[in-house]
Image 1 (cartoon, helix red, strand yellow):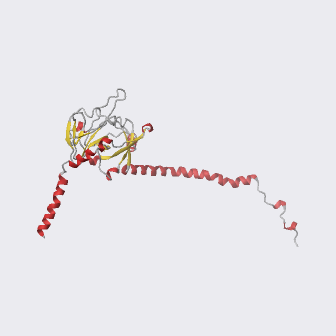
Image 2 (cartoon, one colour):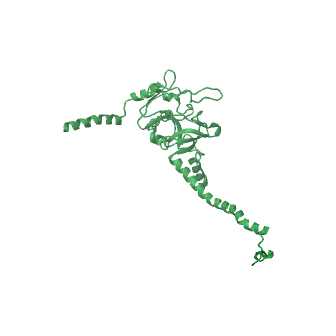
Length: 291
């Protein structure tokens, strides 16, 4: 029989784990974070590209940021504000009176502010990126408030000096420019006008009426001062920068008057609507004669 001593491993043959060997065994685990860190830096350019592509897709189809370069919409919007513009909303509803809209004035209106053209390719590229993300001005885009929609009769002014829409006076005190020092408020308009908005057009005005170069100033243009609805980029719905001016841009209450809706319903129909209305009974009459 073998004794317990015979089955034991001699001390000199026993495996002993030294401190150095323990450190060597742990070294691969210590190197893992380094490998992960290296992997992150390799993936970072891909993540940046994906983020930029997603941002451009969102900008093209859903929401876009815009920089406010002038004081034409004060006090509602200040120079240097950034607003987000909803580009989907008008696929679900019509443009409404009181909406603050951004539209492209190319070939329609002259630039309201002159933006110096970048002198070199790098500056041009940076300016293009800045315009796309709303951190640089774009001289082709305007931001105004919609006062009249297709078919509206816009007039200024009534006996109390108010702008009227289809004979209904607007109370614009909540958004017209007020001087922060004198506290004097702009008049609704210093210019007289009397227009009927044609189909597919909009009558727009800035909230700072004494400074805004809007529909009133473009009455000599082919559109009579109005802008095409298909040039509207979207509705500005929130101020996102600077943070101390974070706020929404709702439709003022004066545009929600029931009298405005009643007056709009009483507005004579457009030629297209009138033609369709007459077409149905005429078609029905012809079918009856054939039968």
